Length: 183
Image (cartoon, rainbow, N blue to C red):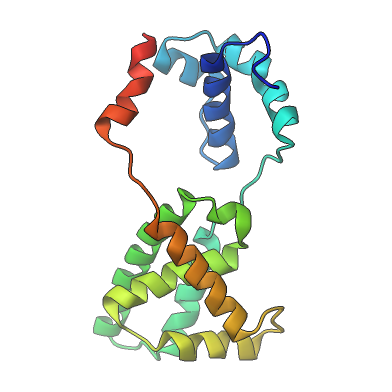
């Protein structure tokens, strides 16, 4: 067990530091320690112990780059030539990015590849904006690539990701302030 002889609070701080690394959101141990009034050496000393205990690799593939590619592809798919169509697609992209942010707060990135996460974000954004026929677009994508999955398998994955987002609970300010108790 990771916490044998080590304070769970210290392990939690190390886990936060590790999460910042995995999310490609650089926060130095010194910066994190200073921000919460803790010695950064405690974080660093427990880092390898935490990683080994979790059997953890330091990368989580995010859907953002893939999402950008799909949006570029959608401009061509939709034949977006005038400013109104391009503005509508850009608005859909912003919504899709917000949906991707929600996806990243679930365990979806550990269960699904970035392409499926990006498609789920696009699907949710298109449900809100209704700019294009999502199923037709999905068929178009599958016809141009050599897919490992059928449309029904992709639809099932998209629905599963959507379900994860539906179960997402946003922490209250009280939940977030629990970290301030350590001071």
